[in-house]
Length: 480
Image 1 (spheres, rainbow, N blue to C red):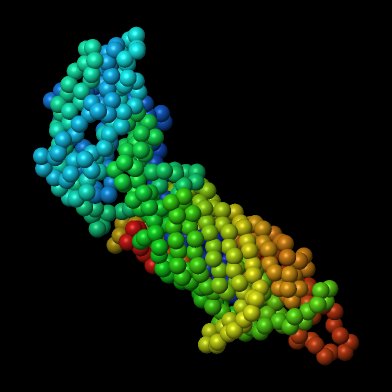
Image 2 (cartoon, rainbow, N blue to C red):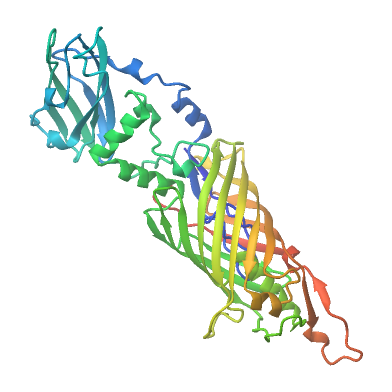
């Protein structure tokens, strides 16, 4: 497993998603938070090309003792047996009994089974194979044993008496979490345990057993939380960032106030960008009229469009994730990210602000992130000491009609907006980066030249292309 992205496309790069899709530059910037992606090399080894699961189902033997080993509470191990059903015979659920455990948990709750294959051969003309798949999901940290009786009824039928055994254990407080095991749409897949599913006839059978044991949603939630490097489904203040933008001559402090992970792999985040620096609300202008603005206000307006406003909600869906956590390894991630926010241009530190019908911004982007690990290790943690990264995003942007007029957005409310950034990730906690955006031009009269005779013409500038510098702090979660 690997700390795939503890990256923060800085200052602005709306780079990787919602957790990534909101870092910023200038007035409204937010850095993408850390993510965990399973180590690519380990993944290949963990997913055999074509696991012929039915070949892993051993013949059921009388007086056997199927042992599920040691299983962490909240997880499950699976096991499969092949049973030959003679012509005219049948094995159904009434022919399987798992008796009260001789010790440990209630066997009816911790052992669940499914029948697949040809288990009803009452009208067959040749012997058929029936597959009995069993899952063990301990409720407590104890050893559980139970007697299983399998009765094949009909001509040539037989009875099997076997003892099921498994041990529950609590997870280690220092154990690494397990992120989803997939490249494409990594956070949207079922479970990251294909090795377990290789022990049963097919993945569907494994997932059904997980659900019957009540561990499916728990495992799924744990994997999603691991991927986003959060301690729980709901998390707070996952990252804090300070960014300075030269054109707006202002700094901003941005923070993820709260994030919510979903079982389908999405993450929603509520965040804010508080501006510390010069800024003033614009004077509303009529349609077709060129506004009069200060250069800093125009630049801050562009940054607000780029980052979604003073208060925003964003959503992210990971599309692709590849990671190699070894020294010199690389990480590549691609996400879909959407954001909706409202802008309060004079929302600065140390002041109170009231507003009515504030302007809003919406963006939908494709974001990408590439990270290259250093070749040296951190002696204290045996982890990568640092890495360098580049990130980029581009997509559709919509902003309020009044906002576009008041700040001289030449192309109106519908625009293409993007950003690129590069920086250093220091031990997965602090990120330092520079970034530059892409967006529409602004045309306005510079308030600094008002009153001059003759009146100077309006200026046309692109404040999206100015550089920003940012530092992001990402608290480590217990799942890392």
